Image (cartoon, rainbow, N blue to C red; front, side, top):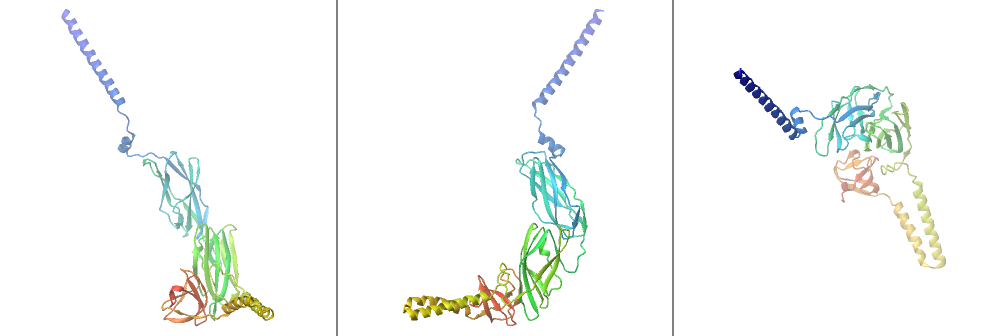
Length: 383
């Protein structure tokens, strides 16, 4: 009996000793876990998952677009991060359009960012690009990129008349114009036009002999163009149309053909000039000189000679006929005094032309076939 009791006590003490050791191991493990801090970047690296902090949606998208129209799309970006450097975008998988703005125009309202992109519709089938947004953090921390899938747009093609100029705009206006004789058969019309929300470089006229752009300040919001058209002498009005997006209809543009003897001077001075003013000035100068001469005869004071010499110099300068200048071989004859303007003729050899006028860097000349053009000073033999 005593022996059985001793065996039972031995087994009891052994069991509780093991339980205490196990509990101590559990407590030690728990304490060790609390001592080691949690490494978020390490966990992120192991799982491969990045935090999503940008959410995209369409804020403004056109219901329909005309082929050739400039339109805008506004997307809304919501950021859960308050302090960051910027949100950058990558646009891919677009169809039938041309991106006009490398960077969107942005409006901020709290954590909402309204990003507006401008596009040109170039096809009858359009798919907006996928907008992939990336947040740039001050500490170069990486976040998950967010992509807004591009929608397809309803595209409408116009059915214009034959005088359509390919211009689609909110507004299109002729600022100034001028017509001069080009040769025995044609006149040349040069005009300056401005437009808003338009691809003004698309301008093209029908029924003209020759046409082209002399200069253009092309912007999708406000643009300006200097354009020329060579037309038959029998044309009394240059007419063409454009499509007005605001009024949703075609608008007729008319330029009256009033031929002037003087040629175009500069692209910012295209309106006709009254040459009779020069004759009037010469007449007044001559009268002043005659009166001064009579006063000298009467008063015998030669100081009044000044009133004769100055008017006579002006009369001689104004009335002096244009002189001939030597033009180098291969020199370009320009329609307008513009550096990147249209060259309508090139001199086959060195020869002299009649010089009629000059401005800084240019000389206006009359060709042997009576055409008027402009030559750079560097193409004159003396230079």
